[in-house]
Length: 405
Length: 151
Image (tube, rainbow over all chains, first blue to last red; front, top):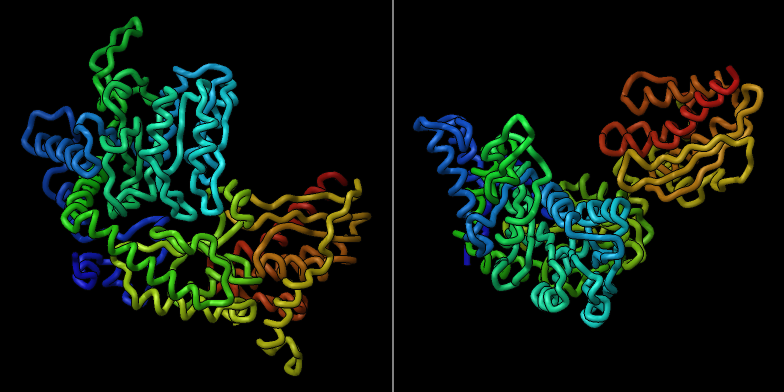
């Protein structure tokens, strides 16, 4: 197991803001120095475009770019050629929805849940409008966990796509991905996993899970913004049409409009990619694997458990996911609007997220439109949790308005 | 503001915000064709309010609002309704202008804003400026629309 104080020294944001308690890791994560250095090195040492150079620095950039694919593949246990770099998970989910739309017909069903983030619902809603496919929601319990019996019942021959987050973004609930995937596959459905809140927090093995597609953003796993990963089983990537067309993704084209595409993954990466981002992501993968994803997950579980016990002592809060083993604590302070509670915490140098967290239909399950989400990562400490809980205890309507005076 | 005014006391101002949040004034939407309406939800992830106003012959006869919103949004809209009801459009515009100056931390006329000076420190929490102006923006737009109709 790593030493959290050593880990904290790796993060310039922590050094530069020693008093700030950052519990908004579900939104984005801090970047270790090695990631920043990798990006700087690309711009100071070997700036070049990729896939088209005959000179030394271009070859170096190309190598670093493909090396990143290998790093990501190692992280998620896939083949290197099954890793596609896009701008973020939203782009990846849109690519998948577009690609699968070619296989879908009126009356086909996309099965999902009401815990999902906007980016895994809106691209499917468009297929509903354009193709007449149906969106159905599987029952979930009060922390958003999919009801396996209902899932089995709903998985009939009309269900062509099953899609959900392996860890939900508001409540941090772990779905039984492997079990659900098996059921979906037995019924001939394709499984698409949003791993935005899982990546970098726990080990992910796409081969073991047997999912068809899985995507995530780099910035939620210590990597830079503007890069996301689309993993797909190679045969599915091979038969899928790219959403974007342009340079870098075609093998040749002629004036009569005939285009021959490159093979996957390159056919999905039109235009100059975010090279610095991909190189930064590569460094982030190495950093996390050096710490060990098992270690990270164990540390986060311990910290989450510690916070849970502390929260049990509070009588001014309603917690929506207290018993979850990992992920954020999502709560409201009684009689205080979520943003007012977050404002009080901000005034006390604690960063949390308030609102509906882009999961705008989740309220149908947890019965509240808005909440405060305190999301942890492996560089957070028990001391920070202590201070945070102390401050949460102080929140009431008076103290929340008090910050304006 | 007169030196002996209660509105110089931060405790009183805080109480005012709490009171307008817990018991907002003019907090009931009406179904009446004379009212113009603005739904304000696009700017922020949370606040979702609707403001209605009945403007006749250049006078704001009534303002009502409702919705889901934080203390600052709710209380500032409630106070806005108190301040602007029965004012002429011209008077209302002046008050709105002074309020916006205060929120943007410029010199402003405190007397004209009455209780609304409770929001004088919102500029220190930049992310809450939207909250303190959401209802005020709505009435500004409604006034503009009413002028358009009268043109």
